[in-house]
Image (cartoon, rainbow, N blue to C red; front, side, top):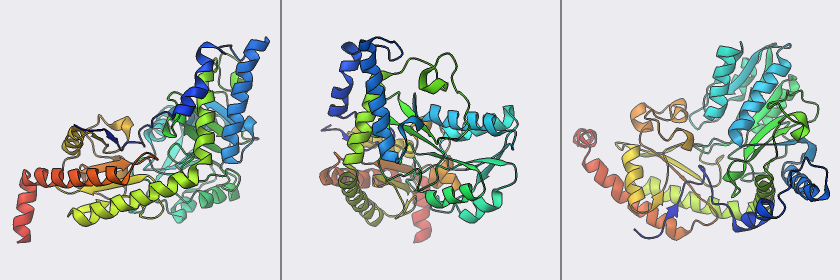
Length: 394
């Protein structure tokens, strides 16, 4: 096996060297607790404040609207659970979609079964996009929250967030978006999009794992999520993860400053890869919107192929890929996202997600597609279903 080709950046990214360098002093030199009153601890407190400002600038937000968490899953849980508790006197209805990350879907399931919430799960079109008419029709006088992800983690489709935000605002409903995949991959202005809450996670943008944030617009009622201290303005208790927070701030600034150049390159390579796969491999389908998609996302379904076998054989060549969300990689069930866009089980099982980074090269793409062609041909030659299909075609 030669060099590793890492094409699973939707699952996690490599922490950038300059991000690591920014974090290092806060492990062993500037290790003070930000809540302490002496000057040494004040250095940590200042670093947290700087990171909060760096992240807020990316969103067009105020730094006091940024609350640090342990990651995107916690942020999603906080947004839904705390908003439901804060606004349940008004109503108990939440609208979301069938293609959300499980951090949203499982939280909605909990709220429905344990807290008495009513949940509407919107269908999406064949490209994974929410129909605005369906959203309008789903709103009731009891609707208190709309939660629609900014961009899908599996198929990369980008939702009409600005239009959804406008609908929510017109009806006086809170709007939350899971932007874990979109933050610093596409421009986001929380005011322009009328976003009230937004979730994100550092390790998707070359930052460290174990740190995220929840943006909460000033004026939104949102109960404390973790009790026990005054950190995060008394809403999320616990000593701050200063190295992680510093790393997230550095990663956000880095990703924002390089966004156009980086994503232009990713789009060019993404489209080149899609073109090669869809023209050189028969019986393949591109999943997700062909235009309104994340700049680094390629997701295809390869008919007559089992996804797990495909991933193992790619791994033999040093190619790291996935069949969907890393959070469900141990599941034998087909992706709920692919089923929601109308794929039958047998085709959904043969899905492949390839997500690029700024380090991906054209040579990496060519090597991957060349190996993919060989693997698909070999697997299909061993497939009775493919053999029967070809006989019928003749």
